[in-house]
Image 1 (tube, rainbow, N blue to C red):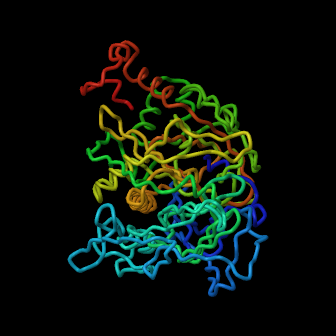
Image 2: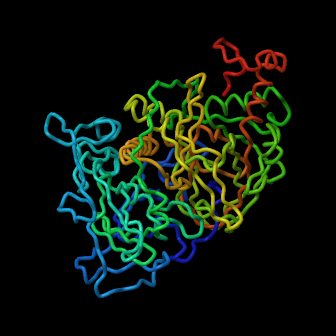
Image 3: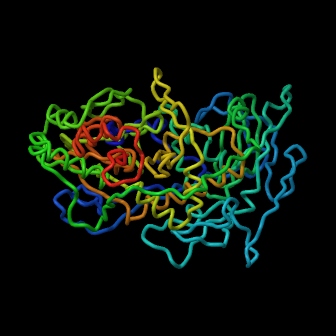
Length: 563
């Protein structure tokens, strides 16, 4: 997904990304307060003039009124839509597996939970709950709570904590066919998994087919309260008030399995890298004229990209031809379903959540490709009649290092559990990688982290995993999501015409604040192999690279250590 291509005007309400408009769920959303100069108050412009730090990240959406009686409950429509529901004077309902008395058809729930020294039930998976980078043995309740030690980047316990043990042991039993049909069997589902993968048009964008729900603002202890069976769709009423819709075909293909896969247990290492601190006085940067005329300057540029994860190029002529030439100084520009070199304004040529003017959280691009692009470059050519659109960078290696210090088990889970991704917005496109991939990709011989894949928008609903494995992954992912939203790892800048930004898409997460007006942006991708080939040859020379083909031995100056 390419957030800097997000230039189109807001659409009609029924088509607007559901991060803004949801029904039946009180959540908090990341947004930046826009100052009078058109910059988010915490954004650092490229002139390095500092702005007062005053970030308004989250706003609440009023909850939808919950159904209170059987007469008010409705049977879902045959097709998933925001309107046109079918009603019945006597709808069929079934209570989900909760702490209350279960209906016989729902099946029993065996909760053999463990407790801590104080008698509190602990989260399944690692025995701890996570609050602001610290392990906390106290499990949370079904109501959002706060502590006295809140910090500037703190949201609520509900958004940071692990799934409580009583919730982790609970599943939802759902009939896999309409009442009265020949399909009488039931399937078991994790309640958080169902809430995260709701198929209603508010949670799954009807045009882009991307996830619109903010996974990590869902309460970890969310549960299904009631089940209503329609002719083609099952409706679940969740404890947070949301009404989820699930076609029977979807439920049949996503039933929990009891088999459990092992987590990544061996500790992985990090290659040497420099991590930028948002309080530093200058960014890694080079001059366009030098890079274009001198191979030594080109090598220095690639060094900056590899070591820091990103670099600014100053003095770029404000035209697409010069920007394209800058990219081609490294290697061939990669062609994707977005095309080759981009030069775009506000339209909806590609149906992707990124093609809006809204806030986009930190993510990596191309998670749905077998081989995601390695480098990504953006150059803002113009921004008229508006403000905003600040650029966000987050160092994924730094975030992974912080996670390893705070909870190594979570690192192992994100390195072992593979997730599916997709790009299916346009009618002629449905891209999936050849194999599913973990968030942290570890080199099998060197045991080093070399790639981070993180994109909640493009993550598909995973199949064939059990409740315990689900809870472990969601707990670890919630921890990582917390880390990448901390002020100490967020790098905010305001791009200006004449300055290009290039970054390592295998390491750096990127995003963008919402904006108004019309922007023209250009840029493109470069493959990993083309980038590394160019970098190794410039740094070590062709003879040394050829001598070390296939050599993974650890010694100083081995070109193959540039991963």
